[in-house]
Length: 248
Image (cartoon, rainbow, N blue to C red):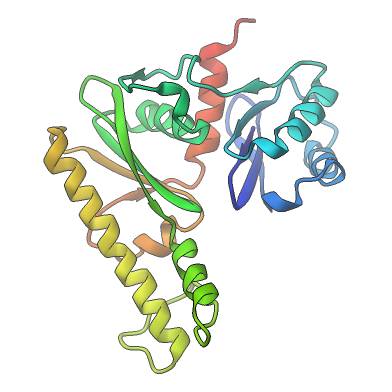
């Protein structure tokens, strides 16, 4: 399974029981040689039956498609809205839904049920909603946490880029500490308000709250809104989509 995001790409193998050999790389480094070396290193001599690709970065798709086909002798399953994802798409233009969002709702419904809100903390943060009738009804997209902090550094003369992991102080004693508090604590406010807005205005009762993405744990650690963090949700969604659409 390959999940190509704007910032990073996750690769994993599934042996019909569980995920293994999960690796994350910078999407900008996805050249033919890098992709080939990663697949070869992680295969460890195993036979790969088929590749499953989920991508929101079209410019690198041909690399992954070619390399996955080379090692399997089959065209990879490229996730799109026409596939069975185990969820009805109650959405005006389903072709505009990102493949990662399709994988997320597929996996979250299988494991956690519905109604449910799944938040994916990536380059952008997406909130996707499945209602009590197991229908995907839409969502919310907001700037990602790192996008906000990088923008401050890019647009100001004196504010630096900051590292977002680790603990948050009660008050900032230097510029980086002050920025980190503003970013993470302020971002929690964004998450809280969007979550409450979705619940209030869409009549979905008391949905389960599930989060994934590289910055989910950073944002939600010790947070009052109890999102359950599931780091491999998207990858498991890809495998589930393969199961639902495998004709062999």
